[in-house]
Structure formats: structure tokens, C-alpha cells
Image (cartoon, rainbow, N blue to C red; front, side, top):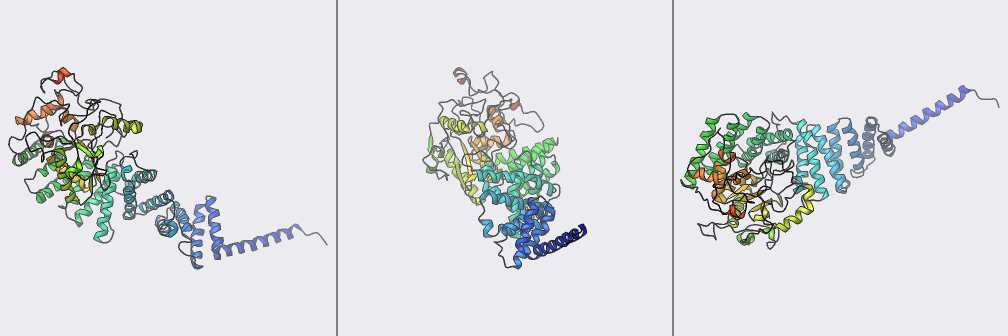
Length: 586
């Protein structure tokens, strides 16, 4: 037999190659398993663009051969990932949603499912389907529970922290997708769907608004929620007004003072119509608006508002509503400051602790535990059975439960020095618990409030109710937004309220420095004296009580403790304004 020429072999090889290619292409175009195998090979090789068409073909072929949705769920999710990688967000999101909605998706382990849902949420944002995205991340926020506000809180498991981390990571995507200067128009369909989306946006916006690095995402979400509620519910509805308390301060921080003014004016007039022109509840909105005017150097308008508020307080609480008391021992008094500069003694323990359950306060733990106890702290000039801390807390919770419809309970009350030391030893390195001796809980006067079995958040209606009404019952917010009392970026604690007595809480609302409670308590005798003589601070002028408060510190000597307040030559420090490095919390 003669030798074959090279041309012969080349021709034969070419023919085989053509046959193979034809058979291969025929297979991957007609056989679902072959198409899926080719898809997975390309994915493993990183050729995602080429893989996309093969994935889509494999899905279609499987369906043509009567495969169930559950059988191809994993293939859909994997194909969705390739679609998203090439910015086909709408198609990618739809495939991913279909895959997750099957029994296969339901059976995924929690971590894997969260990761896929997060990719779905990101795809929705990039596709402009904001309503679907906020639904996902709002559910993440709710499932994160307390980990959403304190990642190191006791009892927060890894899954809760993972949910919280996904919400945190989504802020830049929301900031990029939403124009914070022009509210997003919700197009969810029915009024019920629109309100549901607005609620989700309010929750997420409140979460981002409490963070120092997520203002744009917060403003975009909150402004959309505000406009939706205003359109559907009306400007006077309390759910609409509630967003003012989050969005207004946010606008102020961002320098959008005109927008903040519009919000505050609308909220003030809404509450005026709902609660009456003479209601002291208006004082919150008056103070917000007057403070804004002071930032704009509009002192005449600010002073007019302050005078209006004082008129409301005179009508509601009497002409002689404040008195001077120069002989109080602040180590035991309910108005004593508690901080790094005013620590409690190691052996300090209230002598009048009572179980709050006996006073109809709903509790989140067994009523017999110390944390469900508070000081009785009765008024000296009233019936102690009716005028005391637990009774007033029960009244405040009852009022806010009726207004909000939310489940409210006492999460934490009294903690002893030793209990605080144990908590600090366990968590101190993470900066989430105050050192022993500087926690207001040791006084038996501080309460942490739960809403729906988690820390109360600013986006809860209960928070608005507390902001408006707590001063009537003797409570003030200890750690307001942007405070410097607690190190770290998350020092705002909307759930932590401190009992100081009705008269002091009223004075703080009427004449105290806005959102500076510790400074106010440190300089309380000065404020009491000025208020009793009618010498209230004037808008635009230096607050002399903050310039040089002459009070006795909690660490003063026993000899100094005997001196009347206001007569000690030692000038107390303004609380927490030095570069103190102690890690404190709650």
C-alpha cells in the first residue's frame, strides 16, 4: 500500500473536526445536559459573557424536556449571576427570584440564601426596581434585630450580624440609585403596596440616618417615604409627621437648612391641627425650628418661638412651675449626673427598688429579676403611690402603645455595680457596655425600651411618642444623636431614657440646651435658678449655665458635699467634652 500524502491526513482531520463540531453544536443545542455542561465549563473558565447564552439555552431545553422549576432552580441562579455580571440586571434578578421561590431555594442553608438574596437586592437596585430592593433589605433589617443597632449586643447570633452587615453594605447602592434632592416616586401599585414600600423605606432610612457615613442613602429613602405617606395618608397623619423627626435633623446635618425648615414648619402646623394650638407637645417641634433659626442667625424669629413655647408651658404647668432647691445631695438625688466625670460609688445601691411588674409595666424578662426593677423615686409633695417612677413609666408606655399600636416593654432597668462589672468584663473590649460606676442603670433611674422584642429604633412610632411626651412623665433621652458621651460611630441610643422627675424634664425641654442632657444635668442648679426668676436663655446669646456651671461634682469630698449648691467655688467640668479614652456604652 502506498504512503498517504500529508494533504490526505490534513483533509481527514478537517473532516473529523467538522463532524465533531457539528455533532457537538447539535448536542448543546438540543440536549439540555450537554448545554448545561458547556455553560458550567465556561463559567469555571471565567468566560461569563459566553456562558450566559448557554445558560439560557440550557434552561429552555430543560423546560422543553419537562424538567420542573425545582430541578433547574440552581441553574437559574447560576445563570442569573452571569447575567448580572454583564449588567443584564432585570433578567438576572428575575431568574434569581424564580430560583429562590422553589423548594430548592427554601432548603438552602441560611448563609447561602442570605448571600443570594443580597445579590438579588443589588440587582433590583441596579435595575431601578427600588420597591423590590427595599422589601428585601427591610426584611434583613428586621431579622437582624438588635444586631442592627449594636453588632456586639449580647444574644445577637452570627446570622443576625450577617443580616445587619448586608444592610450596611447596601447603603452605597441606595445612595447611587436615589437622588436625595428629588424624592423617588414609588410606583408599587395599590395604595397598600405604596404604604408598605414607604414603611420599608422609613425603616431603612432611619437605620442609615443613625450612621455617620450613610446620609445620602438615608435622605433618598426617607424623602421618598415622606412624600408617599404625605400623598396617601395626608400631611397631618402621625406616620407622616414621624419622618420629620428623622429627616429634618438629617437635612440640617447635610446643610439643607431650607428643606429642614419646610419639614419642621409642616410638622408643627400638622401637630397644631391634630393636638391643638395650646398643647405642650408642640414644644418638640418649636425647639427644632427655633434651633434651626439660630443656626441661620435668625435670632428674632427663634426668640419669638421660644417665647411662644414658654407661654404654652405657663398655661399647661402653671406660672410658678420651677423652684430653687440649694440643699440637695446630688449623690442620692434623681437629678444627679452620671458619667466619666460624675461616677457612682462602688457601693452605691438605691434603697427603694421595686418590681415594675407590680406597677403594670410590661416587662421583657421575668419580673423577679433585678433588671426588671426600678427606683420608686416618689415625689416628696404628692401621693407616693401615684407620683413615682414606675407609675409614670407605665403611663408613658400605655400612652405610646395606644398611639403606635406597637408592643412596648421594659428591656432593662436597674443593674448593680457588680452586674455592670461582669457585663463590662465580658464586652468591654468591644466598647458596647459602660464601665462599672458610670452606668445610669446603677441608679435604678434608667430604662431601656423594647419595641417588638428588640431595641426601640427612631423609625418606630413609639420613638416619636417618647420624643413628644416623655418629658411630661419625667424622662429625658440620655444619648441623643451626635452626642460625644460615648465613643464610636453608633453612640445614639433612642431606646435609653433616664428619669429625672417631671419638673426637671419640663425644664430641660423648655430651657435646656437641645440634645445636651448631661451638660444640662451638670449645670442644673443654674438652670433652676434662672427659670425660677424668669431669666431664660435668649436666642443668639451665650448660655451662661454652660459657660461656668458651679455645682458640686459627685466625686467631691465629704466636706464639700455638705455645702449648698451654687456656693461651691470649684467649677465643675462640662461632661464628656475632654479627650477621655474610656470605652463606654449604655
